[in-house]
Amino acid sequence: MTGFLIGAIITLLAAWFIIKNYQPQAILLLAGLSMLLITAIFFPEKSILYGQAKSVGWAGGDIFAFVKESLSTQVAGIGLIIMAAGGFADYMDHIKASNAMVNLCVRPLQMIKAPYLILALGYIVSQLLHIAISSAAGLAMLLLVTLFPVLVRLGVSKAAAASMIGMSAFMDLGPAVGTANLAAKHAGMEAAVYFARYQLPLAAGVMVVVAILLFFTARHFDARDGFSAAESERDRPGGEAITAVPGFYALLPVFPVALVLIFSPLIISTIKIDVVTAMIIGTLVAFVCELLVNRNFKTACQGVQVFFKGMGTMFTSIVSLLVCADVFAQGLQIIGAVDFIIQTVQTAGFGFDSMTVLMALLVCVTAALTGSGVAAFFSFSGLAPGIAGKFGESAVRMILPMQLMAGMGRSISPVAGVIIAVSKAGECSPFMIVRRTFIPAVGGMAAMLIINGIIN
Image (tube, rainbow, N blue to C red; front, side):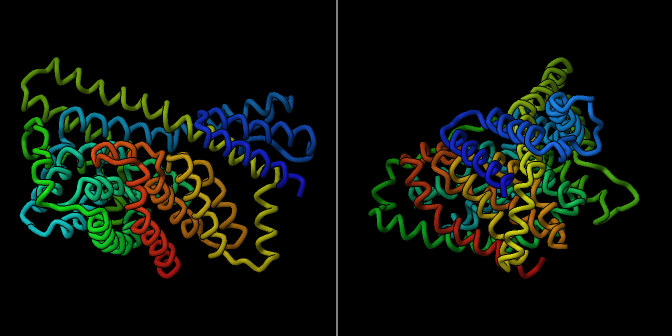
C-alpha cells in the first residue's frame, strides 16, 4: 500500500508537469529516479537493479547505473529500429518519394464526384498511407498539399477536410511505426507478425466505423455551420505545385515494409529481414534511383546524409523519451505500485478484460492531455507484460489496444501538433477541429475495444 501511494503521488506530479508543458523526458526520468531512490532508502530488501545487471557495489550508484542499462538496452534494440525508420522517412521526404506515393493514392479519389464519400474514403486511404509514412505530422502535411485542395474543390468545407486529415494517423499501424515496434517487443513477437496478424484484422473494422462516422459528422457540422459549397467557390484553394519525380518513386516508401512482410514467418520463413535491415536496403535502393535519375553522384551522396540526420532527430525526440519512460515504468514496478493495483483489481473481482480497458483508457487520456501518443504509450507500455502475466493472459491482448489508443487519443487533443497544423489550413481553432473529430474518434475507440475483445 505504501509503495502504491508513493508511486501514485509521483505519477500525478509527473502528469501535472507534463500537462503544463514541461519537457516530458526530464520529468519522467526524475520521477523514475525518485521512486528508485525511495525504494533504495525505505525498502532496502527490494532490488533496484535493471534486469540481470550486477550491482556496482553501492545502492546510490545502482540508481544511476539503472539509467545506463536502460539506455544500452533500448538504444541497441527498439531505439535503433525507431531511429532507422525515422531516418528513412526523412530521406523519402527529401527525394520527394513520399509526395509521389500520396499523389498516386489520391488520384483515383478525384474521379468520384460525391464530396463527403471522398472524405470518408480519403480517411481510409490516408490511414493506409500511414503504414509507409510513419510520421503522423509528416503525413498530414503531405495530405494538406494534395488531398485537401481536392476535397475543398469538390464541395467539402475547409474545416471538414482539415478534420479528416487530422485523423489520418488515427491508428499507428505498420512495422515502421515506433509504438508498433515497441508493442511487438513487449508482446514477444516480430513486428511483421504483430502488424499482419493482430493490427490489420482489428484496424480493418475500425477504419470502416470511423469512415462512416466521418461521413455523417462532416455533413452534419457543415450543415449546422451554414456551409455552402457554392458560396465558398471563390475561396477554394488551387493547391500547391509539387516537384515532379518519376512515377516509380511512389513505390520506394513501401519497399522496406514489403521486405519485412515477405521475409518473415508470414510468407518466406527461411529468410528473415528485420526492420532496420529493410530500412537500410530501402535507403540504398533509393540512393541508386537518385543517382540514375539525377546523374549527380555528389548530390546523391549528400542526400544520404538526411538519413543519418533523421536518425539523430529520432534519438533526440523519441528514443530519449523511450529511455526515460522505461526508467519511470520500471520505477513503478520496483516500488510495488503495479503489484498493488493488480492485487486490488483481482480482489475486487475485475477481470483481465476490464483491466485492459482501464489501461487503454489511461493511455488515451494521457495522449489527449499531452498531445503526444508516443509519450503516452511509452510511459505505460512497459507495465502491460507484467499485468498480463499476473492474469495468465497473452501480453498482446493488452498491449494492442493500448498501442492503438495512443494515436486515437492524439486525434482528440487540441494541443497535438497535427491538430494544430490542420486547424490553420481549416481556418478554425484546434478546439473546432476536435469538436469534429470527437464522435468518429470515440466511435473508433469503442469499435477497437469491442473487436479486440472478440477476435483476441
